[in-house]
Length: 258
Length: 298
Ligand SMILES: Nc1ncnc2c1ncn2[C@@H]1O[C@H](COP(=O)(O)OP(=O)(O)O)[C@@H](O)[C@H]1O
Ligand SMILES: [Mg+2]
View 1 (cartoon, each protein chain N blue to C red):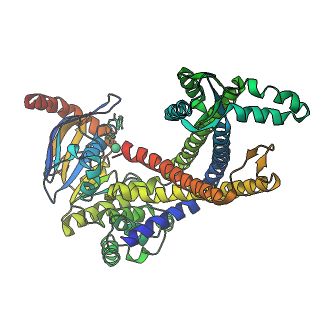
View 2: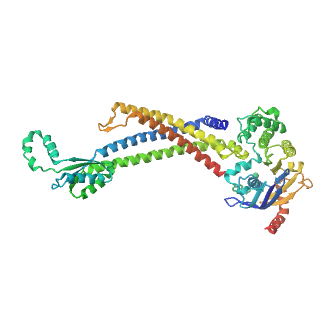
View 3: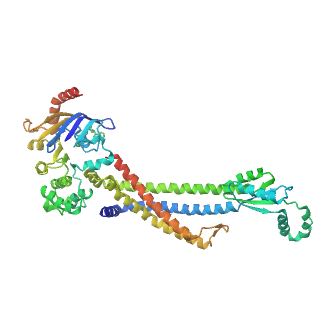
């Protein structure tokens, strides 16, 4: 469903963010994208939702060549994708209910459908009792749940989260990841989580793609479940060490493919 | 459809309300710009009318050769002059008319003058008026070339100078009106740009859930138009008041010679024009600003 074919991305200022990325993700999958800061994770996401255009290669989603979309075609395409970021980006003057409803109003959903769906997603994220509160009045983890509820309100086929637990403590992070798991199961949404939070990736093992310096260095179907990870290692050190082990190999593979 | 329309209008008003300080200061600067636009519109329009008046009152006198006496030749000459481009009217004055006019001018020496009636030194002449003062020189040259015309006289170089100055003033006024309008557009553009930054999150959400560009743009357009209209109220009122007052105390004439344009319907049109300009200014200012944003980020 999501297909990257020999995708490279060089930004206008000359930064090479991604090299020769080949990747397939099927409908209903749950995938982590890991790697240290600056490795190219966010760029991958931006290519996926059409915000950036690949310098070469093709990104296709549901058979649509995303890089070839005209500017005016992007909005309709984007209705297939929900996004969540580290900073929750809620509207402070709207209640939790209104924040979620807003995402449906701006795409012209009828009022009664909005009311029903907002109730439904509020229940799914476990915030039914917070519907009439304002973002300031709830915890960070709860705010992120509102952001997630908003992202899935329009029933996107793909849900993307870029560092969704970056501002949260481990306990809340676990809550958020299990919420993504539930959405993945109950709504059949394909979930892509960009993270460098090693702990969550270990706690909820799923297919894991590791990026380093713009290359895919590993694609592990079972995630880090069977990996031996030193208990006191910093995430970035772990990414660095493992990347060194696999990067040379990945580049060799790339060159074979070119 | 209607619900959506009213939603945009509402959002536009909310936008103005939310950034009231900014909207207000922007409206205020638009007020000044529009006031100047209005002032120059009034001036330029009046100058236009005055210039037209003066240009049309300036005439050439074309003197006919002494040896032409037949009425048909004179009629033909008149036709020929009328055919010249830019000629509005041609009046024939016989040399007798001219002589009588001259004699009447000096009643004291009337008898002395009458002695010359048989040796009339005047020419038969055509009084030629033109459509547009800028054509005066051209028409003069063309008439001079006609066979049977002795010479052509105008009011001298001062006439041309006056026409020239009026022309320049009109062009200058027009350019100023345009420049001030662009300035007003820029002022609104700036305000909306700042408002957009303040509404970063909303736009981010709209973009991410796939709201159409037109939908994202609409409330800002409404907001720009509101700022424009708010900015036009004071200038419209002030200029109407100033004009009415000036018209009243001057009894419709400036410096004893220049007639001012009648307040009605002139002021009605002027008010509508300023309102129209303010709407266009508000629309364009915000359109440019939002378009820049929508272009920069897919
Ligand atoms: N808009 C941009 N213009 C130029 N360089 C960029 C831009 N966005 C990201 N980069 C660069 O591309 C590389 C990958 O960035 P990014 O995809 O954000 O990495 P990550 O999300 O893994 O931290 C980095 O070197 C970053 O500085
Ligand atoms: Mg990133």
